[in-house]
Image (cartoon, rainbow, N blue to C red; front, top):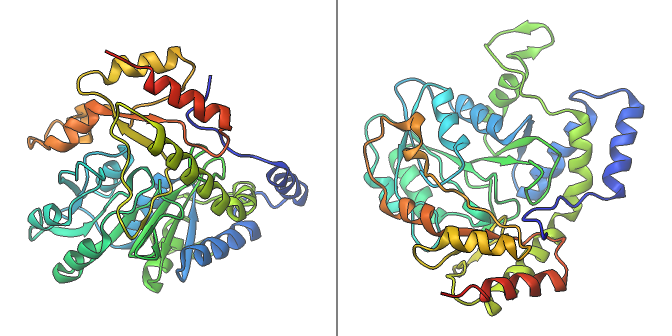
Length: 355
């Protein structure tokens, strides 16, 4: 079976973990600080604040922007549920807008139409490794005085107009094992805002500015040195991993038949966290089963949009493009571990699916 995801762990990561274990400094320590500095430099921002997961990064970022009960945050229904749930964690209300059917990302015009007097922030999700149309979104945010909190959990190294994901507003990344790089588990917040950075550091560490003096209600959202050591070993490899993903995606774009392949608009760098196609209408699940029978691991991200989840049964609006995508999308393996033979096998299987 060709797996849909395969973390690329080498001797450097193993040695880095062993060195931390030998040091005795296992919790948040010098490796976390070094990883934060390196990741901030990679994204081109002043600050990076490491957290225990991408979800806690989103949660912390919202709190650092002082978003809470009575506030609204505009986001997408076509994403992993943590995006919307993090808004609910702080007592705010997620307001959904529909997606662009080509990019699967939110449309700035739809975002602007959803703004009310309670709107406090926009949370675009750079889905599958493609950055949203940030010129339009930043223009909307600036004209209406809204915070920009980028859910960049799937877009490490992705770019729009030469700027990297996580550098437009306050970025939130995940380092879950399936991501473009991993720390086994972990997340990070990126920002140029000194105040947001300070609040994020306080919130993730039990509300402490100095040890054992708790001025705020905070959380234990810290990253460990073990996880940061893995990240430090992975980060120098990220560009190579991304280029491999782009090469694999390019091969698929040229050779796949019978599906709608992903689009990379001009001026964007798509890093293909997932290579997501549209299957023939009404036949996605049939195709999914067929490909697995052919030894091709594949997945559906996401079969139920957030607004149709049972815990969001108070949402009455319909979002036709998100709903249509949830019935048609299918993600194929695109990770750097694929061999030339694997690529040929995937193409042969997809092209072999016939009526």
